[in-house]
Length: 296
Image (cartoon, rainbow, N blue to C red; front, side, top):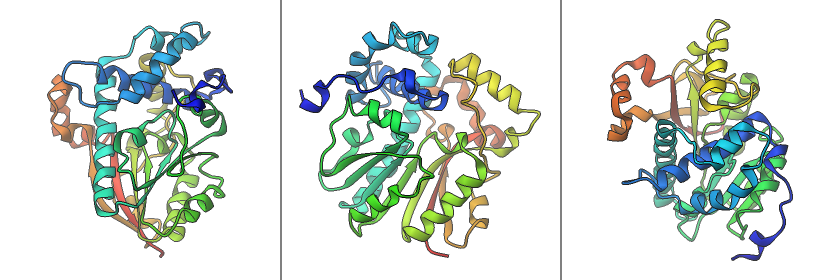
């Protein structure tokens, strides 16, 4: 085992905010699906990490963390999150096919293990998240010259200098299940700043339809997340867009490329939920958008 992984824990999930805790939920969902029959996603690293985490979480005072350690992860949730992770992997592989020495920046990475799934042996990967999350993650993954962890808020733009120092290779920014939890004005400003600092880059991010973020709907969404996912009350959606073209109005440097919804996969594991993709309102309740960024 790598020496980095033998060090005593330097932090625990008890340090996590409600939003950060969702990263453990997605980790366990990927591990669960990876161990299912005919898995959507093969994430051996996630399985390894969860097995090491179980003794720590099973005694946690947090009900959600105890349930994860006992294997109580919703099957539909595992399917949805595995489909999403697989699609982001596919986007990343396609980007690296075009730019083998490209740079991949995983914003709000949590306990994601994409580097271990898609590394081509040439690209540079950066995992970015809050300090408490990165301190914890360092117990389970080893950094290397091409794979580095950055402990920072995405809104502390100093982290961008580390990416710039990695070279002039094209960059793709991934924000999987992140932006919806953040303040809308700051997300819009981030889009614009990324476009200005990294012209020619790409941004792939998951978004929520802002029609569901009204004052009337907010209590329903909050209740659903707490009841169905078991997450804390601070893990609620704040940022959303009406459609994929909306960010183009924030800057002339933001260009819509394409979009993807869970339902577009047509995967049989979606079961009866697959029909919802035929209704545009449901198809774009929570979906992924893909942009090219340039200086305005």
